[in-house]
Length: 184
Image (cartoon, rainbow, N blue to C red; front, side):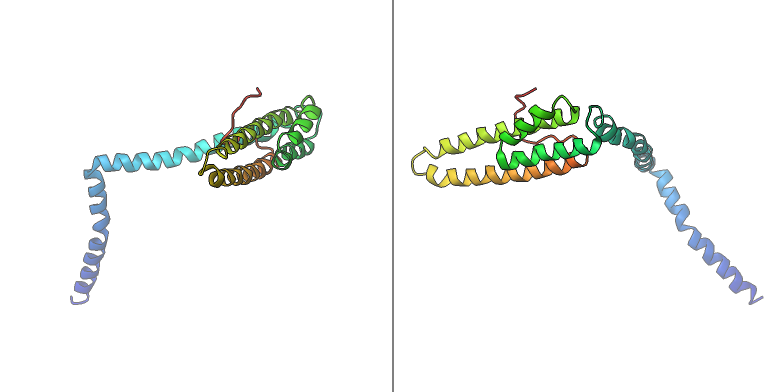
């Protein structure tokens, strides 16, 4: 009988070990607001997974097959021209994007779009340079502030041009965050 008692005590221990999960389930079931929130989180976590699967092909399709290869250029040529439009914008300001856009705009909708975007950004950069130069005319303060503003504009132009070139090289339509879209 002493053997049965330890067995019973072990069996009693295991239900005690099992008792916390029922307590957790009781806590969960007693706090129905929490379960619905947890269930909503679990359902929303499940929903984006199924939604991501449904959304991923349209995004990839919008970034590559829906935009690329609609013109006479191949997809790799379109990506290369889109990249060059942005990178030349960082170096030559509006001249490089303007030349590529004028030559290739009728051959590829992707290059047409990215060329307009790069030119709009370069127009914004030229306006920023004008504002920085105008601050240089302010006595005392302008001499210190204007060179810093020019530096910010040049570095920002290079950074965003490189980011645009990288995204265009992937076949993704890039939009500059600080851009006046004057050319439509």
